[in-house]
Image (cartoon, rainbow, N blue to C red; front, side):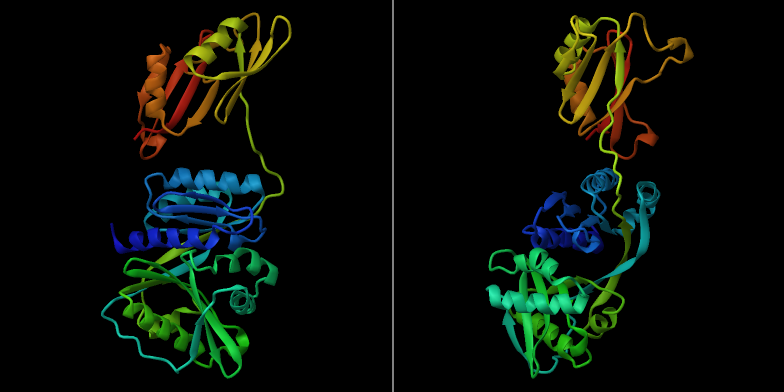
Length: 379
């Protein structure tokens, strides 16, 4: 694994630690990807990180769908290794490119020149956490109540987010957070309000914090910079190892949440038995006496069955006309399950270039000849 992907994985862990206590938090993670959604309607507090994960495309699609379901905007930071491949998919989902974030690293052998002496205090307890929150809100022009709900809540002794405040002649002047993992530590939320900028306080705080963590065995530091902050970090010895594309998904007022295929059957009792016993669905409801309409459900998938007196599809128009396509978490395991249950396959499990990396699909034929495609990961 190259260093950029290694650091992205550390950023995923750090972001999870920062977001975990936010109201309404919904976290989905892999080793290299993270989706964090909160109750806040602000893009900065609904985050997506996409590393070079084998299922990065699937993670992107599911994340966009979940953000739309919750009516939340979403800021995505993406590994350069997958950005070019995923950008067409992201564009179809509604993302737009809005810039890049420099990923910077300070290596063990790089000396850091000390800044001016300042008094530094860790932000523990409600009062000091509030002081750090005041500085962050002022520096980033964030609503103060949002900072309290989404950021201050992580300033605890056990969260994994360690936050420090630098005090000068004018009182508290800047703050920074550190997320250590072994011999590497992430630097985040470096915040100096406008009235305190240009006085060397940020350099003083960060250089002193780095020296302290080096004395405790941390040898490498990383951070995601803004273009405005890049010169400061470069002057301290940080080098840019990648520019991570940043995409934005705006919140949508109207969201499509589900789609339910209508499958036409000539024998309702036979169809219900097949979907329950062979495909593992449960019967959600039936309607009529005898039943002419029913719904079958398995996990998040729903299909509606409608009785007809003769086949509704003209199969002479094409041998492979699908009645439904169902996404699954693991197509290989489901294929093996259906095989053991005695399902009839119109197409066995196959992997085609258009399925995407690590993806495959198979097609089951029901007693009425309806073709049902099941597709997903095959590893």
